[in-house]
Length: 407
Image (cartoon, rainbow, N blue to C red):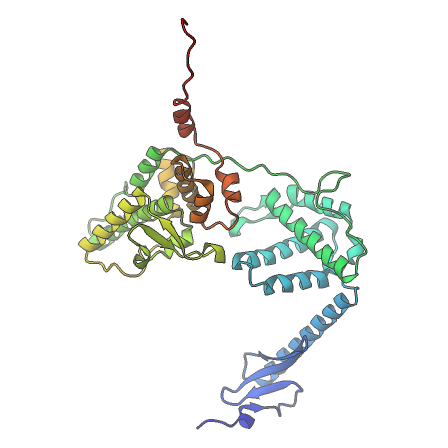
C-alpha cells in the first residue's frame, strides 16, 4: 500500500527544519541554500545523532550565506573569493573532470604553502593584503623549500616543479581578479609577469623526447613476452596464467604504441571498436577526445590480427574488452632495464606513435586529431616538433649537393 503525500514526511521531530522519512525511518534537513530549498540526507535513523548533524548543516548553510553576502557587498575575504571561484569552476560543464579534481589539489596547495611560508591563513586575509612580494616569496618557497610526497611515496621531495608553481600562482591571480570584479579590490596588486622586478613565474623548458629506435622498441616488446625466471612445474594453471599475463602486457603496450591511445583508452578498448580500416578509441580525458576514429597503421593491423587468432585458438569469445588488464607499468619498466634503454611510461608509448607518424610524413593537425587534442595541433607541434636522431641522420643522407666541374 502506498503512503499518501502527507504521511511520507514527519515534521514533528521537535527540531525546526528536520524531517523524518517515514518509509525508511531516516532523517533529513530542509535547508534554504542560495534561494533554493533543498533536502539533505542526515544518513541516520537515530534522532540524537540526526539533530547534531542537522545543526551542523544549518551552521554550514549560514556560513555559506554570509560568505556570498560578503562577496556581493564587495568585502569578501580571500577564503570567500576562493570559494566563489571554486563554485563557478565546478559549475562549468565544459571543464574536464580531471581539471575539476586538479583544482581541489591546487587550492589545498596554495593554502598549505602560504601557511608554512608566512605562518598565516590566507583564507582570513583581505585581498589588498596580498602584494607582489607575497606572491613572489610564496612562489620561491614552493620552488626551493616546500616538501611534498608524490603519490603517497615514502620519501618526501623538496621543491615543486615550475608547472605546479605556475598553476598555484595563477589560481591566486584569478581569485584576485574576482576581488576586482566584485569591488573588494580597486586594482590587481600584481601581474603574473611584472615589468619591474624579478618574474614571479619560473620558465621551464620543455624536455626533448628521447625515444628508442623502432628496432629497439621491437626488442622491448619481445622482451616483455619473455619469462626468465623458473615457472612452477607442479602448478600448470599458474604457469599458464603467468605466460598469458606476460603476453597480454606486451600486447597492451604494443596497442598503445601503434594507436596513440591513452592508458585508460587502451583498457576500455573493445572488440566491437575494431573496425575494418580503423579503431574507435573511447576518450576518457575530455569531451574533445571522446569516441575518435584512428586509422589502423600496418603494425596495429598485424597486432590485432595476431591477438584475434590467438583468442580463437583458445576458444575465447571476441566480444567485450580486448584486454583484461588496465596497465602494464611494471612489465614495461622491467623490460626497459633488460634491453638497456631509459625507462618508458605508458605516455611514452603514445609519444612513440606520434613520432613514427610524423617521420612517415603525416601532418601535425591530422596527428593531433588522432591523439584527441582539441587545439588544432599546437600542443603536438610543441611536443613532437623534432625528429629522432635515427631519422635525422637518414634524412641528412638524402641531401645531395652538386659538385663543381673539374673538382
